[in-house]
Length: 141
Image 1 (cartoon, helix red, strand yellow):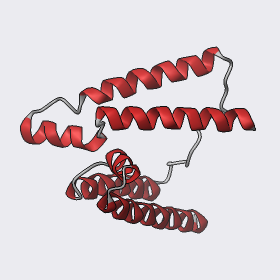
Image 2: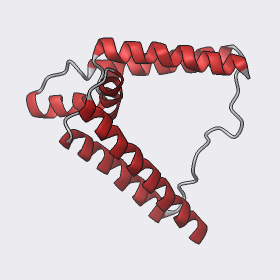
Image 3: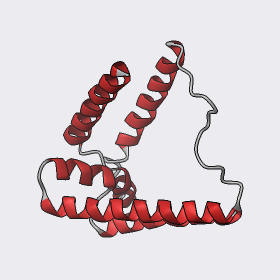
């Protein structure tokens, strides 16, 4: 139990440091590209793809296995699929309107910016609300 906890903490600190130093912003990259044809922030996606592929490969080479992969919700219901898409589009839209992406807001909150803390409070209230709606919907099915 202590090894996964330590590994999660180390990787979390590493990813947080890299996100802060690189100014990585997932949604802002698309915003800048579509509004000003600036590809600077989109280059971060290349790093995410390479890092994800390397991490997955390393996990598999070390003998890691995730039972019942791919895990997550069964999106066979059309209504559940539509509500998930609406939630994702809402997250992107409201993040852009708030002036940043969730990744960047986490970094800014860790640096002590009050507006980012308020953004994250609303963000997590929305996540909990969306989860409650989805769980209630699954009970109906």
